[in-house]
Image 1 (tube, rainbow, N blue to C red):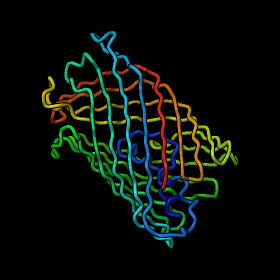
Image 2: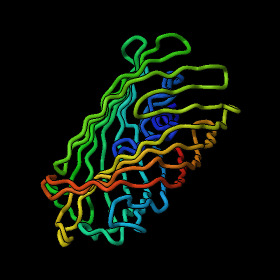
Image 3: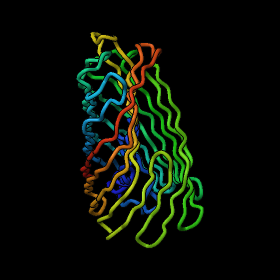
Image 4: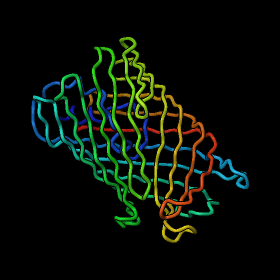
Amino acid sequence: MIKKLSFIITSTSLLLVFPLLADIDDDIYGMEELVDPSQEGGAFELQFNADLISGMNINEEGYNGQNLTFDELSALLRMVFYYDPCNREALYITGNYSYTKLWWEQNPLVHRKYYNTGGIALGFFSNRLCDWIWQGQAEWTLDLDHPQFDRYSTYDLLLWGKYEYDPCTHLHVGVIVQTGMKRDRVYPIIGFDRALTDKIDLNVVFPVNMSLVYNMTEQFRLEAGTRFFSNRYRGAPDDPQPESVIGFTNTGFELGATYECERQYRFNIHAGYTMGGDLRIANANNDNPVHYDLGSSFYWGGEAAISF
């Protein structure tokens, strides 16, 4: 049914925090399990996510004892508004909101502490091509505290294909494009997933899903994997360095547990340890960047989602 379709789009192992994908919890996994829907029309999913990283030491000379906090809370509402059962193709629209606390009390360049952003995304997936599933999305995000479209907007694109090499193995190719705030990035998607046994799945798809999953039951699974953080923001006009372009990147290793009930409800908790990251602060034109090395730290998070 369509409500299952909506839930499958976001039924993932939750191991990525790129802004484009974090808001939708991108997922191409599970689409091959779709059955022909018994009804047409739209379907909705409401989702809440949280990730919190405790104080990360600033490992730079002259900053001894100073630390950075990163907390992010987000919510989204998605609607599948078109579905073609013959080709298993769908179109969906997503609205999202994110609240971020990125706080370094002694930051010499940026005094802004909180970031509120809202966005809208259009996406599709298709099983029209034999043995292929494709997913794509375009998203626009705006800083709600400073609604200047030319200065405080970001744009993100996703194209992700999954090819069935054999019944147990799939190959993945794609690209993630981030632009806006004069900070452009392109990340390739490449890798594979394989069912090692009836209960154990290996996902080696950089950078969207690097995990080992143990399916204890049809509803409950345990996961060990890698989480990639890649977030960008712009400082306030009245900061010591006005309208700084800020980039936060980090990598964590984590354990998690997910409970999913008939693709209608999903709950996840996870906790891990970051391996040290980078805080990049450039001027308003994204020139003359200053990099601050971040120490390792514990983090935790969770997700709750309902499809209706």
